Length: 161
Image 1 (cartoon, one colour):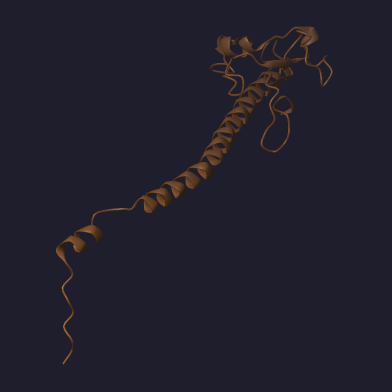
Image 2: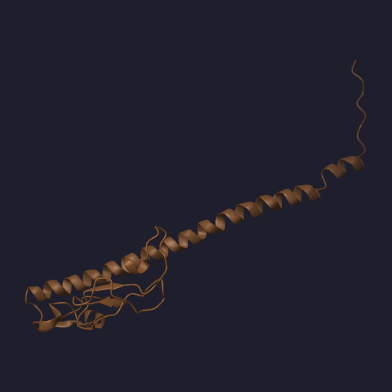
């Protein structure tokens, strides 16, 4: 026959089921702090990556509109000034449109917002400008770039894109 196991007292049973101890709370809080501190940098990188994607999309959209304008000018579908070499005089012309026969053709719906500077001001270059110039000559719009001096995740400067 087995010896009888004494019944634990009711008070002792209550103490073991009462909840977490102070040590357990400190350990759980420490784990949460470590996990949170790891998640914040990841969130910052994700936000920066999204802004970089928006910048590339805006630049592609505007450069595509400039190319379509140049193509239409080269084919003689729109009238252009002689010293512009077929490029638009400014970005507003791409939005306002130009007459093409009996219609008006628009190359852009709106000038996109620069996600890096949070403005609608873009750096412009004309054919006559130096490739690395930060001052626009004002003759035509050959290229656009952001005026942000920030550095991308890949280490390049945003205004060189």
